[in-house]
Image (cartoon, rainbow, N blue to C red; front, side, top):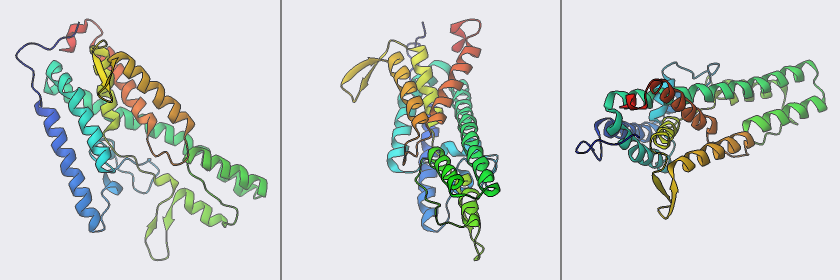
Length: 270
């Protein structure tokens, strides 16, 4: 059974503390530069590899970007709550490795799902171009609305406007107008969900208090979150801008890493 060694527990261990500090600094930078007309998410948020805004470093940097005060607060609270225990158990080096691997793994799964969704839209658009009928337009619109989680109406839009809505493009002013392909994903949630899974894996019978009132064992909380994320990810409701498959990706990668580390003996997780 995994235990925290007596006398070594830190309420706010080094890596968790520094991760929180970096995230807060980046949130402040987003606010300041945003007021100057510079959107950091264009450069540091996660984009699809066919996007005008894609850069390889975004697989890491997206974990330090957040969309609101509530978003960063929830992620940092969870990072402190679960990460502090895990860093005390594993030590700073292994904890940071796990955190970053889960974050990058979550990004890869999210982009894999987005690639499937976007290419479905691109294929439907190609079919529309080859057969520009009202029925084919409706089919394309249904595909876009299903996968994008939005409500588009292309009934009166010319073909070049539909193309630009899908792929983005430059305006006559020289300014770039983002398309569906340029959607951004930001936040530490993928890495944090990896921490949640690891906590439930190592301390399955520890009681977590839902809404600070209802005691539930950690293993059931983890299972419940996983099922909820899968249901919400598959339903893809209109207006839902949460990257549910990134959350699942963090948990899946966390499971794989723990299995590798635990291949010979569970105690090696120390």
